[in-house]
Image (cartoon, rainbow over all chains, first blue to last red):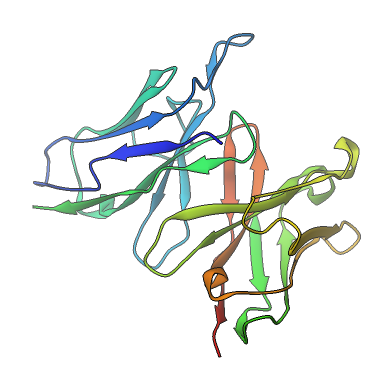
Length: 113
Length: 119
């Protein structure tokens, strides 16, 4: 199974500041035939279901604010919130869908400083 | 608008069984791959299992911790996904989410249903 490891486990950022979450996969999740990274990011607000915010490592889902961006390739990925808003307080998970079983990172809790 | 509504959760004793359902609307269910993902209290997300569309063979896949104990099935005539859980242990206590699974990941989620395994 591919192991996904996120860092940090939690971070506190001031409103308007940048938040950066890292995700590392134990195997390459870049499919060479289509040059796509099979990596998604989810946001889970308190008491809610997870919500897909980024797929293919860098493609925002419909309606996701452009302050959210994803980057990286191969085994190392990053989710960046460029200017943290109060409504961004949540736990964020990366997930690989390159192979079954699909696996998630342990989650990163983002709070307001 | 896609809606996934889970039901069937509750309290069950260790060794017992439970069947969860997920009613789907706003999605072409027959074409959808469907998965179950669970979240133990205060913990992260864990994929449980999936069923592919009939057009893609209708086959199932399972995570190692549940293989042989859980069964994912679908009834396309009712737009409903099921999770039959047998030989339940305390480690299966979690909120169980129904999700649609596409090439981009798990793009729609239900609100979840809580399963508590306790004596």
